[in-house]
Image 1 (cartoon, rainbow, N blue to C red):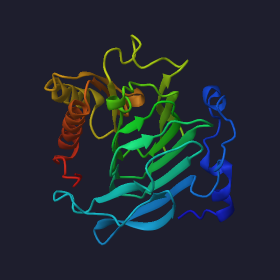
Image 2 (spheres, helix red, strand yellow):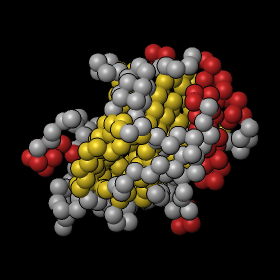
Image 3 (cartoon, one colour):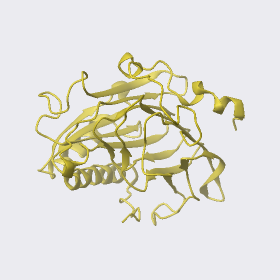
Length: 315
């Protein structure tokens, strides 16, 4: 089990992504009032999981508000050993100068589902930007799901996220993310300054399996541009990182499942290095996208583990 010193966590090098893109650094202006690193501006989660007594347990936990978690729940009747972790945030949402970092270490043979309780709101910003780092380690024989609720960037918001998934060849990791257009009732349709994410999957020796980048916003390609979302309002990505099934077989099953969702535009691709498959889904309403994501998630669970989708007990 790793030991992180307080001085390390207090350093901006710890909670700020290294090598930020130039488009993000251009907005690195000082934050008036509560600046970067001030109390309540740095959210940290460091969670370690291992198997004990026939179930996955949270064995090490460090949290710093505004990020926190409660005890794991065991709510899947078909996988009583699987720990369900709700990633929580105090306050209304992400604001200028916020820096979040999540380190999620899933030890051998663990089964963990990560989600949130509600939509993540990113507020409009006068100064600077906000960032989030997600480091997830999936050890040998693990089954990990990282499926947060959608993200809603408000008008004028600036957000950069870096996600790195270290995946053992015998592990399965399911990842899903949904981007909403903003407060549609107020006429916001992708009017954020920028929404920028980098996702990488790597093997235990550090070799890159695949990388995916999404850049939307002023000067980066407006979401409504042809070749991006066009007339669609909502974008979702769904990744299944696994070597437990040939990618072609898994791609076919997910394609057939999404074909039943006639209100979305979707595509399925095999990931590089034969490490799984990827789906991109676009739709006009959050309900349509939610249904499509639930269907493709359910099909992935069925084909890989013969498991249905559990009730996450969200209102």
